[in-house]
Length: 424
Ligand code: EPZ
Image (cartoon, rainbow, N blue to C red):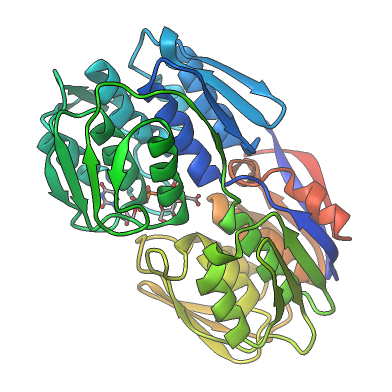
């Protein structure tokens, strides 16, 4: 038997107060990978102290990079990197390790990275990462579960992504900064985290045109300099707390330190569902007064509705009046949370990639199991609305991307505490 942490939650809760939002995990990860592109020092400020980032720091240290936490700043220097083969035991925990492929190839001409493998939300292939790097002259083979990649010097290439891929865009962009000649990437992801990475790479001396658009043009340079770069606010953490404030009757929650412009699709959806919002440039307040109206949504690449908010949105729709359909178009298996919500009394039916949520049923507390990062958040949200006690097991999924969630919720008045339970 092993001892694992869980959240014990007593619902229903009414929340009141402000939540300071951390730096975005999904920008901090490529930013750390980008530090491999130069021998000079890189400082990443407002870095979130979430588990995924600690894992990536350990991986870089294992390769020989110097990485120190200086309060909320990561001080990195890749001058001492002697290895290009991160260990399977760490890579398997954090599939975004694939982001090391482009920088290691561009800087050292070789990389051996365990194939990340699938996860709860889908089989998560990296075929587009591989295809794009091959276009740039890399030899990439799969050997005993590892991606083994070599390239004398990457060459600029033209590549159009068959599908929008966030880390695929980030990987090829980083590789292209040091490639010989011009690279043109089309059908790129336009998430704020991708745009922030183009700005960070430019601050390091990369020559990039098209930031924030679907076409990126890069002129390779001989070497890059260091930089100091601030992590953008985590729009998914912010969206999670905003949806929570909207679904718990009588609540009034504000998120601070956000970029409201990165949340437009969610804010439009919430306004359409009758939520009263006060939207400032870096502060958004939500009041759950007359309750939520059911509104349907389809996930899409940015600027569409984020797949990373789909589970949290379903939790909110269980408290809405009416029927909402939620269609997941990005991942093939991102409804693990639905079965657990049904155990709490939610009236949801699944057909293919669409969940039909009939709101209004009272939820009741139950022992539930987290399966992936955003599903865990969804279960915590539902538990805060439910009558009675809920135990959410395997919250290590949650700690990967949410910093001190229970402390932030306790400060808002939630009945939640972190406990240790026997079992798996
Ligand atoms: C990033 O994952 C995020 N992770 C995910 O956040 C997020 O859900 C996802 O983008 C979509 O927005 C980080 O940024 C670290 P994709 P990524 O490549 O890049 C398919 C979270 O909760 N695909 O944009 O891995 C893929 O299977 C995490 O913080 C291929 O087929 O996602 C998916 O169906 C979860 N071949 C679709 O494209 C490839 O080579 C989009 O995936 C690459 C992707």
